[in-house]
Image 1 (tube, rainbow, N blue to C red):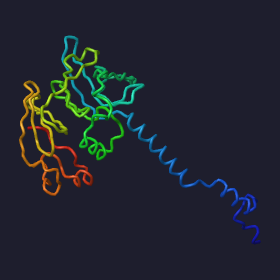
Image 2: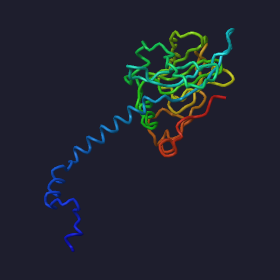
Image 3: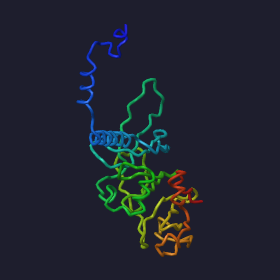
Image 4: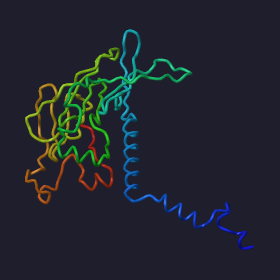
Length: 252
C-alpha cells in the first residue's frame, strides 16, 4: 500500500525528476539579468503613459474649445514633452480616439536629454524616481501661459490660439546668476512673476523685464552641509526621501 501513496503520481522515477530539475536550474547571474530586463520593460511602459493632465478652455467665434495638456512621449521619440488633445465639444456614445499632438517645437536640443542637467536636477530626478528625460514637469496658467524647466534652464510660452495646430517655440527665461533654478511656480495673481529655488534660497523673477530678486539669505555659500544646513523653499533630504515632500507651494 505504501507504493500506491507515492509522491510521484505520474509514475516517473524520482531520480529522473531530480536530475531534470538540476539541469534546468537558473544561475544567480541569469536571474539578475532577468530582473534587470524586466525592470527596463516596466520603466519603458510606465514612461510611455501620459501624466500631469490640465484642462483649459478658450471662447472662439465658433464656440468654446477645450484643450487637455499633458506630458507624453511622441511616436518614434524618446524624450518626454508637453502634448495636447482637443476635447470634443459634444459627448458621444462611442468613445473617440483622440490624436496626441506635440505642443512645443522639439527641434531645440536644449529641451531634451540630460547633458546639461545640474547635480541638483539629477538628485531630484532620483528622488522622484523619474525614468524619462526631456520635460518632466510643467504649469499652465488660466491665460494658457506655460512654465517648465528643461536643460538646466527655465522656459515659457503662451498657447494663445487653441484653434491652431502649429507647434510653439518656447522662450528661455534668462538669468545672470549661476545655479540651477529648481521647482518654478507661477504667481496665481500675476503670471509674469515666477518663484523658484536656487542654492537652497527663494528667488522671484519678472518674465517681462527679466529682473531677479533674492528673497531669503539662508545659504552662506560655504558648501559645507554642517554649516549650511538650513534651506528655504525646499525640504531637507530626509523629508524628501522618506515623506515624499519634494515640491513647495505656489507663489502668492
